[in-house]
Length: 173
Ligand SMILES: [Fe+2]
Ligand SMILES: [Fe+2]
Image (cartoon, rainbow, N blue to C red; front, side, top):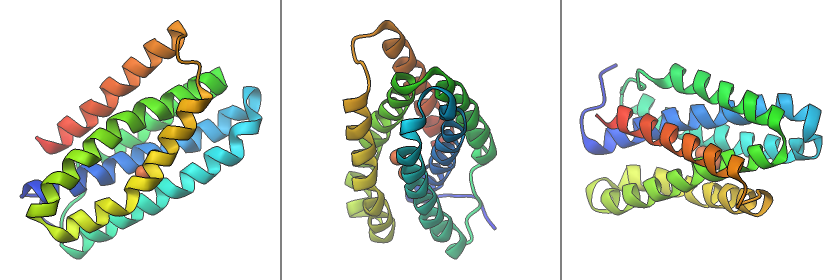
Protein backbone atom coordinates (compact mmCIF):
# COMPACT_ATOMS: atom_id res chain seq x y z
CA UNK A 1 0.00 0.00 0.00
CA UNK A 2 1.21 3.49 -0.88
CA UNK A 3 0.06 6.90 0.32
CA UNK A 4 -2.41 8.95 -1.76
CA UNK A 5 -0.45 11.17 -4.15
CA UNK A 6 -2.61 12.99 -6.65
CA UNK A 7 -5.38 15.44 -5.79
CA UNK A 8 -8.05 12.97 -6.89
CA UNK A 9 -6.57 10.21 -4.69
CA UNK A 10 -6.49 12.54 -1.71
CA UNK A 11 -10.10 13.52 -2.35
CA UNK A 12 -11.27 9.91 -2.23
CA UNK A 13 -9.12 9.27 0.83
CA UNK A 14 -10.72 12.22 2.63
CA UNK A 15 -14.22 11.14 1.63
CA UNK A 16 -13.54 7.62 2.93
CA UNK A 17 -12.47 9.05 6.29
CA UNK A 18 -15.46 11.41 6.42
CA UNK A 19 -17.82 8.50 5.84
CA UNK A 20 -16.26 6.68 8.78
CA UNK A 21 -16.97 9.73 10.92
CA UNK A 22 -20.55 9.82 9.64
CA UNK A 23 -21.16 6.11 10.29
CA UNK A 24 -20.03 6.61 13.88
CA UNK A 25 -22.08 9.75 14.47
CA UNK A 26 -25.25 7.84 13.54
CA UNK A 27 -24.19 4.70 15.40
CA UNK A 28 -23.75 6.67 18.64
CA UNK A 29 -26.87 8.80 18.11
CA UNK A 30 -28.94 5.67 17.61
CA UNK A 31 -27.71 4.44 20.95
CA UNK A 32 -28.32 7.57 23.03
CA UNK A 33 -31.43 8.73 21.17
CA UNK A 34 -33.23 5.94 23.01
CA UNK A 35 -33.64 8.30 25.93
CA UNK A 36 -34.98 11.55 24.46
CA UNK A 37 -35.64 10.96 20.77
CA UNK A 38 -36.60 7.30 20.26
CA UNK A 39 -38.84 8.24 17.31
CA UNK A 40 -35.69 9.22 15.36
CA UNK A 41 -34.01 5.84 15.67
CA UNK A 42 -35.38 4.30 12.43
CA UNK A 43 -34.24 7.38 10.49
CA UNK A 44 -30.80 7.26 12.12
CA UNK A 45 -30.50 3.57 11.25
CA UNK A 46 -31.43 4.33 7.66
CA UNK A 47 -28.86 7.14 7.39
CA UNK A 48 -26.22 4.92 8.98
CA UNK A 49 -26.86 2.31 6.30
CA UNK A 50 -26.26 4.92 3.60
CA UNK A 51 -23.01 6.02 5.22
CA UNK A 52 -21.82 2.40 5.44
CA UNK A 53 -22.50 1.98 1.73
CA UNK A 54 -20.59 5.19 0.96
CA UNK A 55 -17.66 4.13 3.11
CA UNK A 56 -17.55 0.76 1.32
CA UNK A 57 -17.53 2.45 -2.12
CA UNK A 58 -14.52 4.59 -1.21
CA UNK A 59 -12.79 1.69 0.54
CA UNK A 60 -13.05 -0.40 -2.63
CA UNK A 61 -11.75 2.48 -4.74
CA UNK A 62 -8.68 2.87 -2.50
CA UNK A 63 -8.02 -0.87 -2.19
CA UNK A 64 -8.21 -1.49 -5.92
CA UNK A 65 -5.50 1.09 -6.44
CA UNK A 66 -3.35 0.08 -3.47
CA UNK A 67 -3.82 3.42 -1.71
CA UNK A 68 -3.54 3.59 2.08
CA UNK A 69 -6.40 5.06 4.07
CA UNK A 70 -6.01 8.44 5.77
CA UNK A 71 -4.00 8.53 9.02
CA UNK A 72 -6.96 10.30 10.65
CA UNK A 73 -9.42 7.50 9.73
CA UNK A 74 -9.79 6.15 13.27
CA UNK A 75 -9.61 9.58 14.88
CA UNK A 76 -12.50 10.66 12.69
CA UNK A 77 -14.46 7.59 13.77
CA UNK A 78 -13.80 8.26 17.45
CA UNK A 79 -14.59 11.97 17.09
CA UNK A 80 -17.79 11.13 15.23
CA UNK A 81 -18.81 8.68 17.94
CA UNK A 82 -18.24 11.20 20.75
CA UNK A 83 -20.15 13.89 18.85
CA UNK A 84 -23.00 11.49 18.10
CA UNK A 85 -23.10 10.24 21.67
CA UNK A 86 -23.45 13.73 23.15
CA UNK A 87 -25.89 15.13 20.60
CA UNK A 88 -27.98 11.96 20.80
CA UNK A 89 -28.41 12.58 24.54
CA UNK A 90 -29.50 16.15 23.87
CA UNK A 91 -32.47 15.12 21.74
CA UNK A 92 -34.11 15.83 18.41
CA UNK A 93 -32.89 19.37 17.77
CA UNK A 94 -29.24 18.59 18.51
CA UNK A 95 -29.38 15.42 16.40
CA UNK A 96 -30.87 17.26 13.44
CA UNK A 97 -28.51 20.24 13.81
CA UNK A 98 -25.51 17.88 13.73
CA UNK A 99 -26.61 16.23 10.49
CA UNK A 100 -27.48 19.57 8.95
CA UNK A 101 -24.08 21.05 9.89
CA UNK A 102 -22.06 18.07 8.64
CA UNK A 103 -24.02 17.77 5.40
CA UNK A 104 -23.95 21.47 4.57
CA UNK A 105 -20.14 21.33 4.62
CA UNK A 106 -20.13 17.97 2.82
CA UNK A 107 -22.43 19.13 0.00
CA UNK A 108 -20.29 22.20 -0.75
CA UNK A 109 -17.20 20.02 -0.58
CA UNK A 110 -18.68 17.39 -2.92
CA UNK A 111 -19.79 20.00 -5.44
CA UNK A 112 -16.24 21.35 -5.48
CA UNK A 113 -14.78 17.85 -5.86
CA UNK A 114 -17.16 16.95 -8.69
CA UNK A 115 -16.27 20.09 -10.59
CA UNK A 116 -12.57 19.24 -10.33
CA UNK A 117 -12.91 15.48 -10.95
CA UNK A 118 -15.10 15.86 -14.04
CA UNK A 119 -11.97 16.97 -15.93
CA UNK A 120 -9.31 15.24 -13.87
CA UNK A 121 -10.42 11.68 -13.14
CA UNK A 122 -13.67 10.16 -14.40
CA UNK A 123 -13.51 7.06 -12.15
CA UNK A 124 -13.26 9.23 -9.05
CA UNK A 125 -15.97 11.51 -10.44
CA UNK A 126 -18.30 8.52 -10.86
CA UNK A 127 -17.83 7.22 -7.34
CA UNK A 128 -18.33 10.65 -5.74
CA UNK A 129 -21.46 11.17 -7.88
CA UNK A 130 -23.00 8.05 -6.35
CA UNK A 131 -23.27 9.53 -2.86
CA UNK A 132 -24.43 13.07 -3.63
CA UNK A 133 -28.18 12.43 -3.60
CA UNK A 134 -28.07 10.55 -0.28
CA UNK A 135 -26.16 13.39 1.38
CA UNK A 136 -28.63 15.90 -0.04
CA UNK A 137 -31.55 13.95 1.40
CA UNK A 138 -29.86 13.76 4.85
CA UNK A 139 -29.32 17.52 4.70
CA UNK A 140 -32.89 18.33 3.69
CA UNK A 141 -34.49 15.98 6.22
CA UNK A 142 -32.39 17.37 9.08
CA UNK A 143 -32.96 20.99 8.10
CA UNK A 144 -36.71 20.46 8.35
CA UNK A 145 -36.36 18.84 11.80
CA UNK A 146 -34.17 21.37 13.56
CA UNK A 147 -35.10 24.63 15.29
CA UNK A 148 -33.06 27.09 13.27
CA UNK A 149 -33.20 30.24 15.37
CA UNK A 150 -32.21 28.70 18.71
CA UNK A 151 -28.91 29.70 20.34
CA UNK A 152 -27.97 26.08 21.00
CA UNK A 153 -28.58 25.22 17.36
CA UNK A 154 -26.35 28.03 16.15
CA UNK A 155 -23.49 27.12 18.51
CA UNK A 156 -23.72 23.44 17.68
CA UNK A 157 -23.87 24.05 13.93
CA UNK A 158 -20.77 26.22 14.17
CA UNK A 159 -18.75 23.69 16.17
CA UNK A 160 -19.74 20.77 13.94
CA UNK A 161 -19.01 22.71 10.76
CA UNK A 162 -15.53 23.67 11.99
CA UNK A 163 -14.76 20.06 12.95
CA UNK A 164 -15.94 18.75 9.59
CA UNK A 165 -13.84 21.33 7.76
CA UNK A 166 -10.83 20.39 9.90
CA UNK A 167 -11.13 16.71 8.91
CA UNK A 168 -11.23 17.72 5.23
CA UNK A 169 -8.31 20.14 5.47
CA UNK A 170 -6.18 17.68 7.44
CA UNK A 171 -6.79 14.88 4.94
CA UNK A 172 -6.03 17.01 1.88
CA UNK A 173 -2.75 18.49 3.13
FE1 LIG B 1 -22.06 9.65 3.30
FE1 LIG C 1 -24.72 11.71 5.04
